[in-house]
Image (cartoon, rainbow, N blue to C red; front, side, top):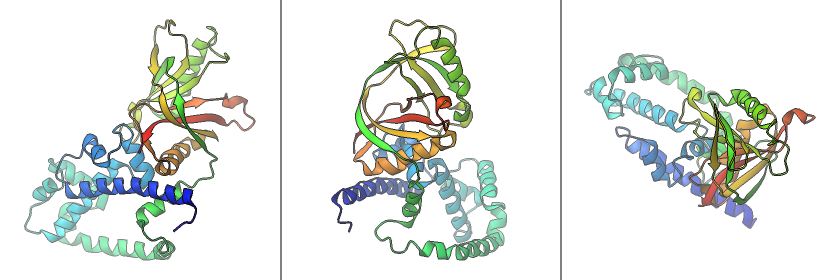
Length: 322
């Protein structure tokens, strides 16, 4: 046991998060033939539905949807070997597939062969390949044997979040903000055009450069759930409530309340790592969990003016006690 009380408390809090994720994994494995939708699984974990996919990925390194799909297909593979009297259609149904064509396509993509070929002996060759792969990685896995009391699955992923990013997190009350926004739909990496449109509108109206002006990006969707080309981001600037907009400009309120605000100084390629450091590194050891409000990034500089072209920003995540 770590003799540092603060470190020990963080370990306990992280284990609470891991325990909740384990419950979800167990529920999925025991209910593969049932509807495994977001609402049900988030309730099993007692986590916010809006943030659950992001938390699952941050703690496991795998999206929730991919885990469900993989577990269903691996169960199907086992049943094809063990229940040879059951038809492929029956096994597909037992594993949550109501459409045989969808199952067949997914099975072939995952195992590299049809379900029929797998059942007729293909699994033997696949087993040899995977055994060789396991043996080649055995020396790496042995290095983690000293870590007792926590699964290797989570221990390995935890290392991912020990990045070189410098992060300072403060939990504080954030004010409600009234903002004008330009909505971007699509890949986060292409949001720059929306920022340019917003700045061209805000500059002539005197909204830039004031002591109370805030520029932020509000995220409406979870990238673990929503397809990339449908992700919504509102690029915003604070404005007086009486401000009128037209065309593609809109106005909205950004909810106030308790937020965990992580300060970062990062380049364009480090945004995902920063979010993972917050969700998978800081949050599970904090004593907080995500609340049901939209997260956002609050910007403190124009990165083009930075000598290293870095963004200074806060990642703001709504939280409540665990």
